[in-house]
Length: 84
Image 1 (cartoon, rainbow, N blue to C red):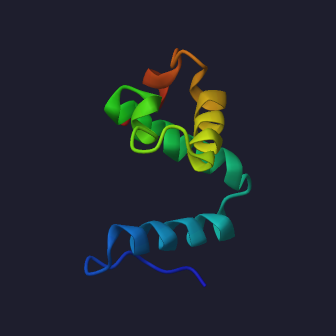
Image 2: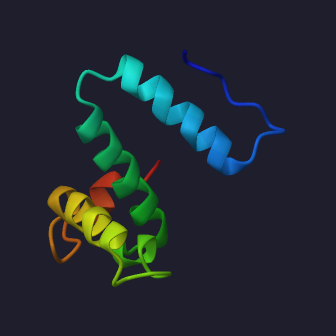
């Protein structure tokens, strides 16, 4: 069921394909997902950047909890997840 990225796909379709591949291949999918979100937050130097569009939504609450559990509540470990 895994799919490779197609440049003609939208970023949502590419992300879905990446998640499907990770579900199949990652032993600890939750940890992988938390790490990916932490890396994205690190690029913006803020975990809040991931939820800025709808900070009060239930989805944002779940993302906040997952990311903060990875980078700490004050983003203390955010730089540990920055891509090289």
